[in-house]
Figure 1: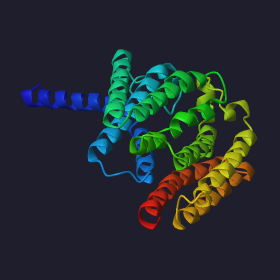
Figure 2: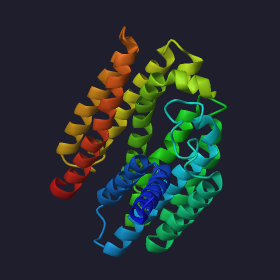
Figure 3: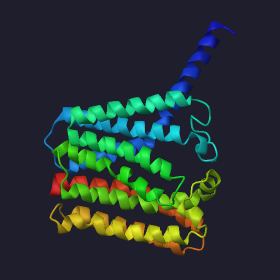
Figure 4: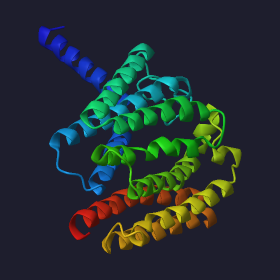
Length: 301
Protein backbone atom coordinates (compact mmCIF):
# COMPACT_ATOMS: atom_id res chain seq x y z
CA UNK A 1 0.00 0.00 0.00
CA UNK A 2 1.37 3.42 -0.97
CA UNK A 3 1.92 6.15 1.63
CA UNK A 4 -0.82 8.27 0.04
CA UNK A 5 -3.27 5.38 0.24
CA UNK A 6 -2.37 4.77 3.89
CA UNK A 7 -2.85 8.45 4.71
CA UNK A 8 -6.20 8.47 2.92
CA UNK A 9 -7.38 5.40 4.84
CA UNK A 10 -6.25 6.92 8.15
CA UNK A 11 -8.09 10.17 7.41
CA UNK A 12 -11.24 8.27 6.50
CA UNK A 13 -11.05 6.22 9.71
CA UNK A 14 -10.71 9.39 11.81
CA UNK A 15 -13.66 10.96 10.00
CA UNK A 16 -15.81 7.91 10.75
CA UNK A 17 -14.75 8.02 14.42
CA UNK A 18 -15.62 11.70 14.80
CA UNK A 19 -18.91 11.11 13.01
CA UNK A 20 -19.76 8.37 15.51
CA UNK A 21 -19.07 10.63 18.49
CA UNK A 22 -21.13 13.38 16.87
CA UNK A 23 -24.02 10.96 16.35
CA UNK A 24 -23.88 10.02 20.04
CA UNK A 25 -25.02 13.53 20.90
CA UNK A 26 -28.27 13.12 18.86
CA UNK A 27 -27.59 16.40 17.05
CA UNK A 28 -31.12 16.94 15.72
CA UNK A 29 -32.72 16.40 19.12
CA UNK A 30 -30.06 18.56 20.77
CA UNK A 31 -30.70 21.29 18.19
CA UNK A 32 -34.41 21.19 19.04
CA UNK A 33 -33.52 21.77 22.70
CA UNK A 34 -31.34 24.74 21.76
CA UNK A 35 -34.02 26.25 19.52
CA UNK A 36 -36.79 25.92 22.11
CA UNK A 37 -34.46 27.35 24.77
CA UNK A 38 -33.73 30.29 22.47
CA UNK A 39 -37.47 30.84 22.01
CA UNK A 40 -37.86 31.01 25.79
CA UNK A 41 -35.00 33.48 25.99
CA UNK A 42 -36.30 35.74 23.21
CA UNK A 43 -39.93 35.56 24.35
CA UNK A 44 -38.81 37.00 27.69
CA UNK A 45 -37.77 40.18 25.83
CA UNK A 46 -34.32 40.29 27.48
CA UNK A 47 -31.84 43.13 27.51
CA UNK A 48 -29.28 42.57 24.78
CA UNK A 49 -26.29 40.79 26.26
CA UNK A 50 -24.21 38.85 23.75
CA UNK A 51 -22.10 37.19 26.43
CA UNK A 52 -25.09 35.72 28.25
CA UNK A 53 -26.62 34.63 24.95
CA UNK A 54 -23.48 32.80 23.84
CA UNK A 55 -22.88 31.03 27.16
CA UNK A 56 -26.55 30.16 27.56
CA UNK A 57 -26.87 28.69 24.06
CA UNK A 58 -23.57 26.85 24.38
CA UNK A 59 -24.48 25.51 27.80
CA UNK A 60 -27.88 24.34 26.62
CA UNK A 61 -26.32 22.59 23.62
CA UNK A 62 -23.74 20.86 25.81
CA UNK A 63 -26.34 19.75 28.38
CA UNK A 64 -28.56 18.36 25.62
CA UNK A 65 -25.62 16.60 23.96
CA UNK A 66 -24.43 15.19 27.29
CA UNK A 67 -27.88 13.88 28.19
CA UNK A 68 -28.27 12.29 24.76
CA UNK A 69 -24.86 10.62 25.02
CA UNK A 70 -25.55 9.24 28.49
CA UNK A 71 -28.96 8.02 27.31
CA UNK A 72 -27.34 6.06 24.50
CA UNK A 73 -24.76 4.68 26.94
CA UNK A 74 -27.50 3.37 29.24
CA UNK A 75 -29.64 2.02 26.39
CA UNK A 76 -26.84 0.46 24.34
CA UNK A 77 -28.08 -3.10 24.94
CA UNK A 78 -31.72 -2.41 24.12
CA UNK A 79 -30.69 -0.29 21.13
CA UNK A 80 -28.98 -3.38 19.73
CA UNK A 81 -32.34 -5.20 19.76
CA UNK A 82 -34.23 -2.67 17.65
CA UNK A 83 -33.93 -2.29 13.90
CA UNK A 84 -34.34 1.48 14.20
CA UNK A 85 -31.42 1.89 16.62
CA UNK A 86 -29.06 -1.04 16.12
CA UNK A 87 -26.79 1.02 13.85
CA UNK A 88 -26.19 3.66 16.50
CA UNK A 89 -22.49 4.10 17.44
CA UNK A 90 -22.52 1.98 20.62
CA UNK A 91 -24.41 -1.13 19.44
CA UNK A 92 -22.53 -0.90 16.13
CA UNK A 93 -19.20 -0.98 18.00
CA UNK A 94 -18.00 2.37 16.63
CA UNK A 95 -17.53 3.85 20.12
CA UNK A 96 -16.61 2.06 23.35
CA UNK A 97 -19.02 2.33 26.31
CA UNK A 98 -16.21 3.80 28.44
CA UNK A 99 -15.61 6.64 26.00
CA UNK A 100 -19.33 7.31 25.61
CA UNK A 101 -19.83 7.46 29.39
CA UNK A 102 -17.05 9.95 29.98
CA UNK A 103 -17.98 12.04 26.97
CA UNK A 104 -21.53 12.32 28.29
CA UNK A 105 -20.33 13.26 31.78
CA UNK A 106 -17.87 15.84 30.45
CA UNK A 107 -20.41 17.48 28.14
CA UNK A 108 -22.97 17.64 30.93
CA UNK A 109 -20.60 19.17 33.49
CA UNK A 110 -19.28 21.81 31.10
CA UNK A 111 -22.83 22.61 30.01
CA UNK A 112 -24.04 23.13 33.59
CA UNK A 113 -21.00 25.29 34.40
CA UNK A 114 -21.60 27.38 31.28
CA UNK A 115 -25.25 27.97 32.20
CA UNK A 116 -24.48 28.72 35.85
CA UNK A 117 -21.61 31.16 35.39
CA UNK A 118 -22.46 32.45 31.92
CA UNK A 119 -26.14 33.09 32.67
CA UNK A 120 -27.27 32.50 36.27
CA UNK A 121 -27.78 29.88 38.96
CA UNK A 122 -31.42 29.18 38.04
CA UNK A 123 -30.47 28.42 34.44
CA UNK A 124 -27.74 26.08 35.68
CA UNK A 125 -30.11 24.30 38.06
CA UNK A 126 -32.64 23.83 35.27
CA UNK A 127 -29.92 22.43 33.03
CA UNK A 128 -28.93 20.01 35.77
CA UNK A 129 -32.59 19.12 36.33
CA UNK A 130 -33.06 18.41 32.64
CA UNK A 131 -30.15 15.97 32.59
CA UNK A 132 -31.15 14.36 35.89
CA UNK A 133 -34.78 13.74 34.95
CA UNK A 134 -33.84 12.49 31.48
CA UNK A 135 -31.10 10.11 32.59
CA UNK A 136 -31.95 9.08 36.16
CA UNK A 137 -35.75 8.97 35.89
CA UNK A 138 -37.05 8.80 32.31
CA UNK A 139 -34.47 6.41 30.83
CA UNK A 140 -34.79 3.67 33.52
CA UNK A 141 -38.60 4.00 33.52
CA UNK A 142 -38.79 3.17 29.81
CA UNK A 143 -38.31 -0.51 30.63
CA UNK A 144 -40.75 -0.47 33.56
CA UNK A 145 -43.87 1.52 32.76
CA UNK A 146 -45.91 2.83 29.89
CA UNK A 147 -45.97 6.21 31.66
CA UNK A 148 -42.32 6.79 30.81
CA UNK A 149 -43.35 8.86 27.78
CA UNK A 150 -45.19 11.34 29.98
CA UNK A 151 -42.28 11.49 32.41
CA UNK A 152 -39.91 12.03 29.49
CA UNK A 153 -42.00 14.96 28.30
CA UNK A 154 -40.88 16.92 31.37
CA UNK A 155 -37.15 17.17 30.55
CA UNK A 156 -38.15 17.67 26.92
CA UNK A 157 -40.13 20.75 27.94
CA UNK A 158 -37.53 22.29 30.26
CA UNK A 159 -35.31 24.06 27.66
CA UNK A 160 -37.71 27.04 27.25
CA UNK A 161 -37.53 27.51 31.02
CA UNK A 162 -33.73 27.48 30.81
CA UNK A 163 -33.97 30.23 28.22
CA UNK A 164 -36.43 32.26 30.25
CA UNK A 165 -34.30 31.89 33.37
CA UNK A 166 -31.20 32.99 31.45
CA UNK A 167 -33.06 36.11 30.32
CA UNK A 168 -34.78 37.12 33.56
CA UNK A 169 -33.28 35.14 36.42
CA UNK A 170 -36.80 33.93 37.20
CA UNK A 171 -39.72 32.37 35.33
CA UNK A 172 -42.85 34.34 34.41
CA UNK A 173 -46.27 32.90 33.43
CA UNK A 174 -45.45 32.90 29.71
CA UNK A 175 -42.42 30.74 30.44
CA UNK A 176 -44.66 28.18 32.13
CA UNK A 177 -47.06 28.34 29.19
CA UNK A 178 -44.16 27.49 26.88
CA UNK A 179 -43.34 24.59 29.19
CA UNK A 180 -46.96 23.42 28.87
CA UNK A 181 -46.92 23.73 25.09
CA UNK A 182 -43.78 21.60 24.83
CA UNK A 183 -45.13 19.05 27.33
CA UNK A 184 -48.49 18.51 25.62
CA UNK A 185 -47.03 18.66 22.10
CA UNK A 186 -44.73 15.74 22.80
CA UNK A 187 -47.54 13.27 23.52
CA UNK A 188 -49.27 13.22 20.10
CA UNK A 189 -45.81 13.40 18.50
CA UNK A 190 -44.47 10.39 20.41
CA UNK A 191 -47.70 8.40 20.28
CA UNK A 192 -47.34 8.53 16.50
CA UNK A 193 -43.73 7.35 16.78
CA UNK A 194 -44.65 4.64 19.29
CA UNK A 195 -47.32 3.29 16.95
CA UNK A 196 -45.08 3.34 13.89
CA UNK A 197 -42.27 1.48 15.66
CA UNK A 198 -44.39 -0.60 18.05
CA UNK A 199 -42.86 -3.91 16.95
CA UNK A 200 -39.36 -2.58 17.58
CA UNK A 201 -40.33 -1.41 21.06
CA UNK A 202 -41.97 -4.74 21.82
CA UNK A 203 -38.91 -6.72 20.74
CA UNK A 204 -36.70 -4.60 23.00
CA UNK A 205 -39.02 -4.99 25.99
CA UNK A 206 -40.28 -1.40 26.21
CA UNK A 207 -43.86 -1.40 27.58
CA UNK A 208 -45.01 1.50 25.42
CA UNK A 209 -48.73 2.25 25.35
CA UNK A 210 -48.82 0.90 21.80
CA UNK A 211 -47.30 -2.36 23.07
CA UNK A 212 -49.56 -2.65 26.11
CA UNK A 213 -52.58 -1.96 23.89
CA UNK A 214 -51.72 -3.23 20.39
CA UNK A 215 -55.06 -2.06 19.01
CA UNK A 216 -53.81 1.54 19.18
CA UNK A 217 -57.06 2.82 20.66
CA UNK A 218 -55.54 3.99 23.94
CA UNK A 219 -52.53 5.63 22.31
CA UNK A 220 -54.62 7.48 19.74
CA UNK A 221 -57.19 8.57 22.34
CA UNK A 222 -54.38 9.83 24.55
CA UNK A 223 -53.01 11.76 21.58
CA UNK A 224 -56.42 13.43 21.13
CA UNK A 225 -56.67 14.37 24.82
CA UNK A 226 -53.23 15.96 24.80
CA UNK A 227 -53.91 17.72 21.50
CA UNK A 228 -56.93 19.35 23.15
CA UNK A 229 -54.79 20.38 26.12
CA UNK A 230 -52.16 21.72 23.72
CA UNK A 231 -54.74 23.86 21.93
CA UNK A 232 -56.08 25.28 25.19
CA UNK A 233 -52.69 26.06 26.72
CA UNK A 234 -51.28 27.55 23.52
CA UNK A 235 -53.94 30.29 23.30
CA UNK A 236 -53.69 31.34 26.96
CA UNK A 237 -51.24 34.23 26.28
CA UNK A 238 -53.90 36.35 24.55
CA UNK A 239 -56.22 36.04 27.56
CA UNK A 240 -53.41 36.99 29.93
CA UNK A 241 -52.38 40.02 27.89
CA UNK A 242 -49.00 38.51 27.00
CA UNK A 243 -49.14 38.84 23.21
CA UNK A 244 -50.78 40.66 20.33
CA UNK A 245 -53.19 39.30 17.69
CA UNK A 246 -50.87 37.27 15.43
CA UNK A 247 -49.69 34.55 17.80
CA UNK A 248 -53.13 33.32 18.99
CA UNK A 249 -54.34 33.04 15.38
CA UNK A 250 -51.34 30.91 14.41
CA UNK A 251 -51.50 28.86 17.63
CA UNK A 252 -55.22 28.20 17.24
CA UNK A 253 -54.93 27.28 13.56
CA UNK A 254 -52.04 24.86 14.06
CA UNK A 255 -53.54 23.53 17.30
CA UNK A 256 -56.78 22.66 15.51
CA UNK A 257 -54.70 21.07 12.75
CA UNK A 258 -52.86 18.81 15.22
CA UNK A 259 -56.15 17.98 16.94
CA UNK A 260 -57.67 17.00 13.59
CA UNK A 261 -54.69 14.77 12.80
CA UNK A 262 -54.92 13.19 16.25
CA UNK A 263 -58.63 12.49 15.75
CA UNK A 264 -57.80 10.94 12.39
CA UNK A 265 -55.19 8.78 14.14
CA UNK A 266 -57.92 7.62 16.53
CA UNK A 267 -60.61 6.97 13.92
CA UNK A 268 -58.87 6.09 10.65
CA UNK A 269 -59.10 2.55 9.32
CA UNK A 270 -55.45 2.86 8.23
CA UNK A 271 -53.88 3.83 11.54
CA UNK A 272 -50.34 3.47 10.17
CA UNK A 273 -50.86 6.18 7.56
CA UNK A 274 -52.67 8.42 10.04
CA UNK A 275 -49.80 8.07 12.53
CA UNK A 276 -47.26 9.09 9.90
CA UNK A 277 -49.31 12.17 9.00
CA UNK A 278 -49.64 13.12 12.66
CA UNK A 279 -45.89 12.74 13.15
CA UNK A 280 -44.89 14.91 10.20
CA UNK A 281 -47.53 17.54 10.93
CA UNK A 282 -46.42 17.73 14.56
CA UNK A 283 -42.91 18.54 13.32
CA UNK A 284 -44.32 21.53 11.42
CA UNK A 285 -46.30 22.72 14.44
CA UNK A 286 -43.41 23.74 16.68
CA UNK A 287 -41.47 26.10 14.37
CA UNK A 288 -44.67 27.78 13.18
CA UNK A 289 -46.10 28.42 16.63
CA UNK A 290 -42.84 29.30 18.36
CA UNK A 291 -41.72 31.66 15.60
CA UNK A 292 -45.13 33.34 15.68
CA UNK A 293 -44.79 33.89 19.43
CA UNK A 294 -41.33 35.45 19.18
CA UNK A 295 -42.34 37.60 16.20
CA UNK A 296 -45.50 38.73 17.98
CA UNK A 297 -43.66 39.62 21.19
CA UNK A 298 -40.80 41.46 19.45
CA UNK A 299 -42.63 43.22 16.62
CA UNK A 300 -46.32 43.57 17.46
CA UNK A 301 -46.65 43.44 21.25
